[in-house]
Image 1 (cartoon, rainbow, N blue to C red):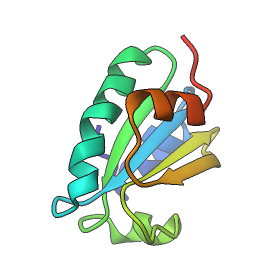
Image 2 (image 1 turned 90 degrees about the vertical axis):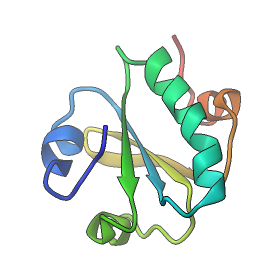
Image 3 (image 1 turned 135 degrees about the vertical axis):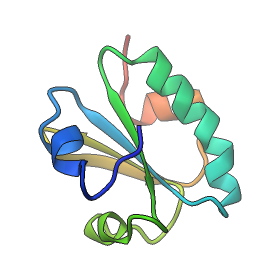
Image 4 (image 1 turned 180 degrees about the horizontal axis):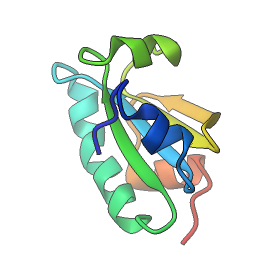
Length: 103
């Protein structure tokens, strides 16, 4: 799901599920590498986690709001509040372990 300034409140702040945001850009090599891993997380945890992508070039307001200075950056939120973040490429297993995801 693409997260924008316009749908952020509805899709992230008001989400009943925790949210994992992937901040990325089309020109970013590591962003392309992690994209497949993030899709796997979204598919595997679809009932327990909402996953959204934020293109930093198209959504500078959100990039600034989250003080994103390195991409890719993954930000985990519960009840609209940031809980944890990490930057750089990670495998599916590393993402799962870092954010403490469990089936």
